[in-house]
Image (cartoon, rainbow, N blue to C red; front, side):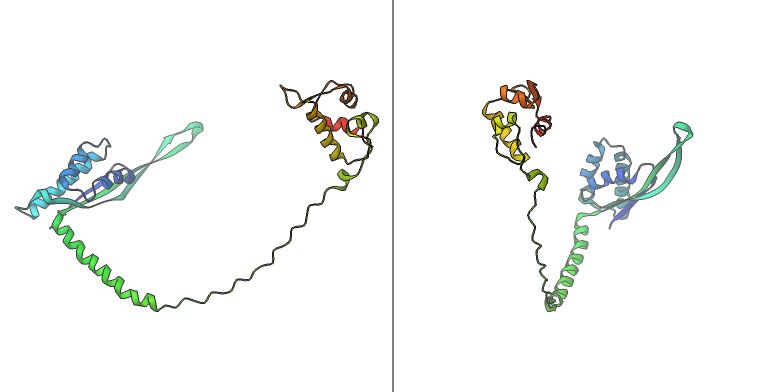
Length: 240
């Protein structure tokens, strides 16, 4: 015959107490007492006293019973009263403090009795599942509706900006590098970079800087070194 012990309004949060309750649920009482005795968490102390109280209650109900076969059949933690207090805070404010508490219930029982009580429930669940099985088979699946396929929109090819693709005539100084034939601005930049890489004019230490040779120095306005970000500005002066 099972025995119950209850602890009311213990001043710690239910969450902290449930961590201890989860440790001992389903254990033999001897092992549960050993685990609680060596657990460093402070709720382990009242939980151990509660298990001992449940064992004592079981002994009174079952005189001559074997205490070694007892298990912690059930243990659960419920929320209890909450004391609301205020803590002083900066600029005349106050922080709210909630001092929580909990109710703990422990049920111990003989291992053999606990298994016997579980067996009828398991058999009833199996019988209920078997009774519902034919009803599940007789159900017909609803006909699937044909999904309408939406025509995929054709992506139009991106059109380049006409201003960038207009052919421009290079100046004599720029023609010495890219040729005298009229070409778009983008092609001019590509040919300049081909010339820079072919002659290894990109600075070795700072790759953003271009070291001008005799031909590029005229294009860059007499500068011996120009940033790649300023290069387009110098090229635009030589295109018309």
